[in-house]
Image 1 (tube, rainbow, N blue to C red):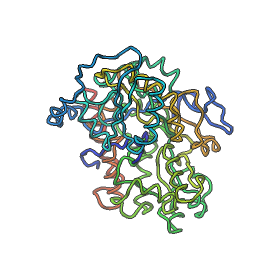
Image 2: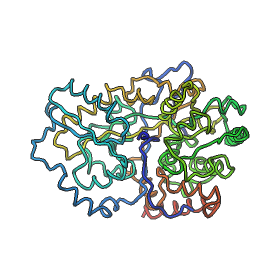
Image 3: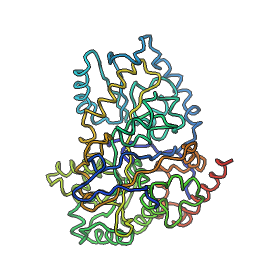
Image 4: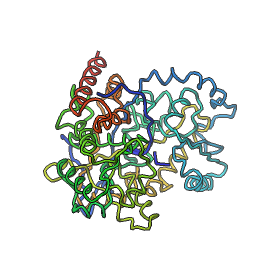
Length: 486
């Protein structure tokens, strides 16, 4: 079972779609070697990457009415007295997408938490289809006491309808990274589980055998490197088309070229899929890779879990993912009897004046069900999980705690002096505009549907070519912008 994000591993589900046919931040943080960092961690303190919804908000209340009525009996309308502000006590239910950890790591976490807070009980409910299941349950009050904010079901302006405020964005930002992303209108509703930097995981031996020992700085160099890998008999790139959610994570690269204000620029732009802009680069590189025959022969047969072993064993060369994936790939290498060091992580091939950049973003956010009868214990769990569990470190990910150190999984970035970019907050009063435009245009920017169609076009299994696909996306975006502006 894969992780939840940003960029990882939230496993957003595919949604039916109409066929989709740098001012960097004021002072982008650089990680020289050795890293010298704000707060001693070598990482930016805040980031805002909002995930547009792949379906209209109306879907949340309309298409699941029958399921909702069935779930009302379990809606959490308990007669148990509410424990909103007292000492932690009693039982809480935590919804999670980590089906692979509930009986091991998370069980140990619960024991440790319960030892710290006698009289508490933590139960986990692991959801294989996290996005789909929570979409139904959010229509009732039955969505646990603590949950991960769904990336495809709730817009930021809906946060107050479902989640308990955790504090002001300003105050929590002093303690936690990524706070803006889990906030709306100055109020924080979620605290990050961990963060990632964007790039691609690769097998060092495969790339070295093809004569590539330094990261390509341009798309041309990158595609040439993949061609060299193909010549050795190895599949250069793996799309993870079938599972979909890993394919969706490539949107986490938004901002790598245009910089921190890219979202603000996009809501004022009628043609984001134009050469020189992030959307064109993100989707164009994927299209060109597939069109050149540099990915798996049949993307409909890909398998996320298998991809880890394929990369570890040198049967594939690379995958665009967040740094959260490095530890998983290294685990697979170790399991295969190889050195963990065979797995590397390089920045995307969009260097500017010789300097690589990478957007950092949060994975899922922990939140409290506003209908919970045990908010005190729920909040204690979130605080303990974030500050004391060591979960982020165990995943080789960026800790949400601002004073925590850079993870070893980013050692390649440190050596390369990669500059991290944190996306700026959306303009006040326009926090949901990019979501609204994407929804109106039926373009799931952080989903996988239109990119699967992009791959189909690139491999000749769908209509259109690169330019017609991008022209259609631009047309739909412009029309949606005009509609939303009205």
